[in-house]
Image (cartoon, rainbow over all chains, first blue to last red; front, side, top):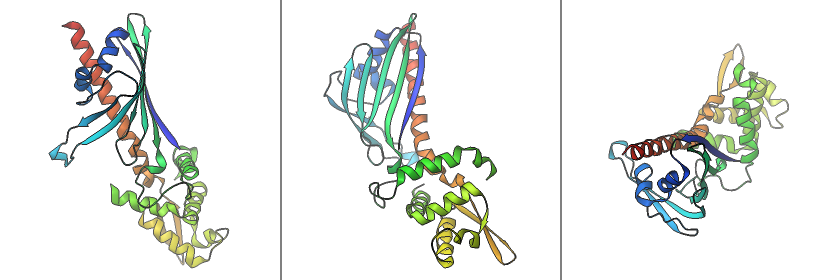
Length: 147
Length: 108
């Protein structure tokens, strides 16, 4: 069972300007993280997420590869951050909306069955997919109100 | 987070335990006797499974006379749900930053 995060936002600036903000390495660093992004398919790059000593967070490196790049409308890159988040996919789609831009962001490929690590439970032999579907149904279904 | 999550996933890795939990979640509170009927395993085995589920906080027990009643605690599944929610917050935060950045640049 994979989960997808989807967001749709309206931005007052035109697609060309939004495109620059998501494909220019320096600008990208300002709203995401330091990176060595280049807007060409096949380019492998990383986001370096800084640590936070107060939260005892050491920081991490997200490994990415540009999968699609069609200025000024579509950018897709892979996103691997280790553990449960391997080979997920981030995509941005930009559409003109009047003078502004409608942006569709999607982060797909979260595999719930790997949510807490591979050490104890590998593969599909435990029926995680089926189980999680049922559990989530139970959790959000009408019966949950009674429990 | 991980200790709790480990218990949770270990508890649910066993198909018999999963069936017990699903049944409690679906049908509401039940005694060990009732659960043993249809579980396909002995009562001591059911009790043992219930102890593991209880340890993972997936079920809660209540004694009434000579019987112990068990009920499901689906909110114990929260760590699994939280995991995706963290990424949702991450993107909401980043997209907000992008919008702020773009609005600053266009007024400059």
